[in-house]
Amino acid sequence: MKRKPVSELTMDELGKQKNLLNGIIIGAGLLLLFLTGVILYQIILEQQYYMSLLLISCVLSIIPGFIGLQEIDKEMKNRITEDK
Image (cartoon, rainbow, N blue to C red; front, side, top):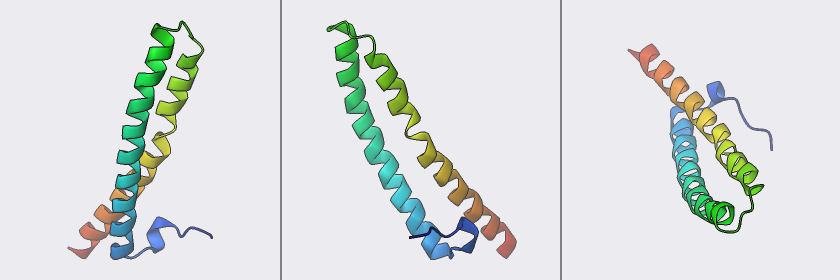
């Protein structure tokens, strides 16, 4: 299924997308927080230093969610200022 550009969505659809993306980011953040603890345990106590690469990739994996949320916020603000 092809995703519509943000500029073609209605305000209701933008609100739903924003709420969905917020939920995904919060859930992924909590999961990454738990995984960070496990990875740090592996690094410190088990002397498995290669796990630090996994830690970096986990943090980087959440960045596209923030970029999408920023696009939605920007589009919503543009539409609100156009209506005034």
